[in-house]
Image 1 (tube, rainbow, N blue to C red):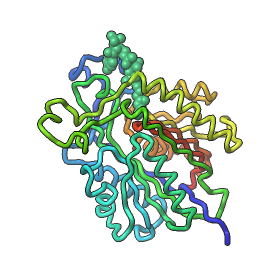
Image 2: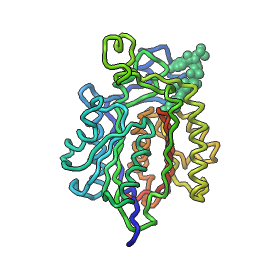
Image 3: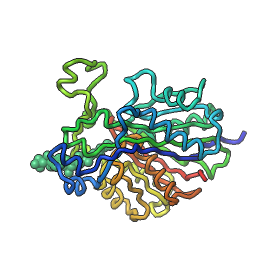
Image 4: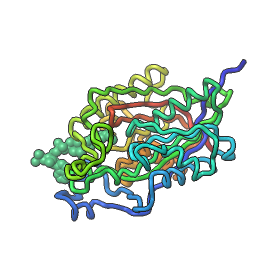
Length: 333
Ligand code: UT7
């Protein structure tokens, strides 16, 4: 019997209409456009409307990915959503809500929590489901309403994060040349306190104390996270390239997690990537966590830079701590 491979066949994304720029942040906290631009490369982020939820953004990204795949909704046999800002903590899952809004019923659907690494984690799960023969067409979506857990009086975090969603279809193929070549995903829970949303959860169920102490907001050890991100992302890329006997100059698009331009630059330099190889969207979207990588892929797709067969290297890092990388060709049209 011929082997089954998983292929990345389409991409879609959505960014909400409202824009929060650095000048607006200057009015909210003690910061400046100059500081933010120099230290992060971020100029603007998109913020969801009050009545626009993680599932709504996810649906818009999924609709594009489904349409571009040429598949009917009936052909999708698994829906997975990566998010740390689900519609509800934690039932029903955002994947169930997205499936329902898309009109996809009686199909397995669930969420995963891997923070910014979520989308690449989903790739590894989709690949395993497809290669095992259990599923044929998997819809994966990273969607975040990060503004719902950001404290807009904390200048260490509020300048970084934005909202958005990105989705892809991963389909079965017998053609090895179209396969997702490799996905590495890993974690080290001992650094869990670097990035944490303390409540609500079983440690701190919702209470007046949670609200009084702002435990419902994301907390980050920014500088420590920064240093570990550069080290881990660089090592992760070296490992996956070596494991697959690929040199960095063979990569058409290096798509790193869009957290901070200085992290991306440091990793790009260490790996000797040219500027044309590095995909950058952090200036306009900020850090959109699990949506960051697929939003960046969608950007090069919509601008016409991403062509069928192009070799992409994805590399991401986030709360957990988690990290992941993937080597794959784009098989969309
Ligand atoms: O997606 C998950 C992964 N997340 C990340 O990778 C985020 C990683 N971290 C970062 O991007 C950076 O650490 C930040 C952008 C958050 C901070 O930049 P930094 O160069 O690491 O600055 P720092 O935390 O070492 O702070 C340097 C100074 C401090 O002032 P003092 O103590 O030197 O007087 C901060 O209080 O900058 C100050 N500062 C700010 N100043 C103006 C911190 N945030 C701001 C701000 N505006 N927004």
